[in-house]
Length: 284
Image 1: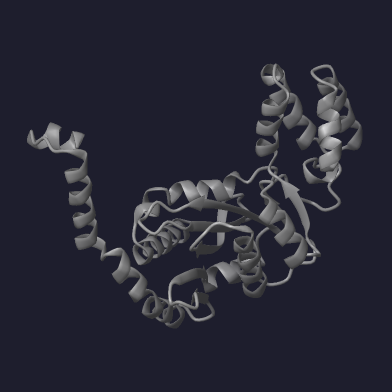
Image 2: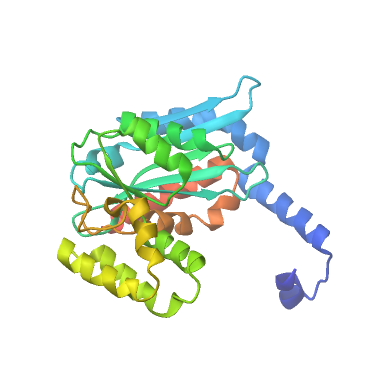
C-alpha cells in the first residue's frame, strides 16, 4: 500500500492491496493449489537430476498434503566430511495453507553452515519431529559420535531419544539463557555473560567457578540447571565432543535466509531453497 502511494500516487484499501498481491503472486508462481498438484512431478525431476538424492512426499488418507522432505546427494556426500553435529530448528510457513518448515544443518571444516535436509509438514505437533528425524536417519550416514543441538521443544527431545538413541542431545544455550531471564527476574544485567562462559569453558573446575559466580546472582539458577542436566548445556560436562556448537543459530540462520520465501507456494519455496543452497556451494 505504501509503495503504491509513494511511487504511483495510488491509494487503495488493505483488502484491495491484499487481493492484488495474491493475484500477482499467482501469476508469477502458480496458485497454491496448482503448486501442490505440481509437487509429485517436481520430486521426480529432483531425484532424476540429482542421482543419490532422497526426495519424498506423502498425502493423508483424504488426499491432502501431509509432508515433504529432501536431502540432496551433495548434502549426503558432504555430511561425512563435516563435524558429527546436527543442528535442527523449525519455523512456521506464512502461505495460505500454513505448515512448518524444518531445517537440519551442520558445520564444515571452515565453520560454515552446511545444509543437510529440509522438511515441510502440514501441521505442528509432536509427530512432526519423529518423522523428520526418521528421514534424517534414513538419509545420512551413521556417525557413532553424533551430537544433536536444538532448543528444548518436547517433540524434539522425545524424538531424538527414540530415533537417535545413540546420539548425545544438547540444548541451545541462548534458549536456556532466555528462560533464565524469564524465571529469575533481576538477573538480566550480569547473568548473561556468566552463564555463557559457564557453558563454554572446557573444564569442570572452570565451570564450577562460574556457577559459584551465578550463585551470587540467584542460588536457584544452579538448581534449575542441575535439574536440566549439566551435560545438556555445558561443554565441560558433555560426554561427547560438541565442537563448540553451543547454539542452534546455524539452523535459525538458514530459516532466516528463507524468511521471505516462507510466503511462497510450496514448489516455489522448494525452488528458492535449492537455488540458494546451490549459490552457496558455487561460491565456496
